[in-house]
Length: 294
Image 1 (cartoon, rainbow, N blue to C red):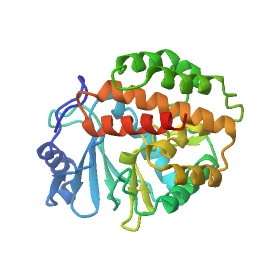
Image 2: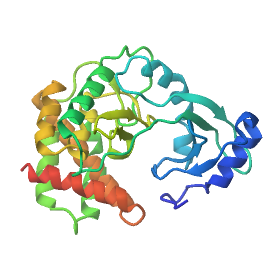
Image 3: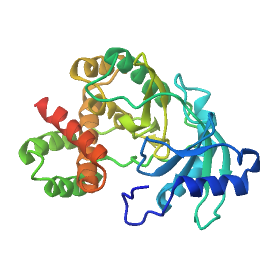
Image 4: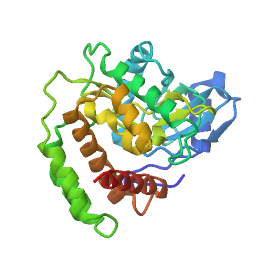
């Protein structure tokens, strides 16, 4: 499979097939094939009709496996939308260096920005998901991958903006970013957030409804504003406003959420501009949407 990171290991369907056969012989006869959804942290392979193998591409992603196996069953029981259910955990073998997972397969397709079947219904579904998640009993969960206050991202965000100066209006982007930095910080207790609600981590039904949310390796405690990413990553303006209303988002949280979307998109555009055209197109769309708001 195509590599996106300099420290990424080789993965393919043949490796996944060997790992499954060696460690889970009850599934050895099932077909294994690469999944068209290309994750940046994990390579995915369909296992039979009802399962998927996820192989971390790099060491950082491998560190998230324990969290996923512990927390996804507990979170899934409380959420209105299906999320991945871990079925088994594999160990290093066949030259592959890390633990890996088998999950239940979840049906659906990634939403295509600009071609949503029912954008307002999707906005309502997304709002229900993020509000339910943030109200979930926090118990003793981990910090989110994106749990830092926005000001701690300032240097990286400005560096990424400079890297893509040929693609993004510097003045307009800085104006949005500095507005987000001035917004009142989150003062409530941290809440559960997914923290990466991008098109590649969302599945929709043929009717356009949210059918599943996947890839929870970044999930944990943080600022509720981080889960506003789909407002700009997925939804058109009219559905964006509905999402904000249904999710009951105040002005300060909305401004921080826009700042998060800007920062994440800038870093993605800079990092993936020569390795992942899908991520680049998505990031450029997000920036266009944000800057069009003025």
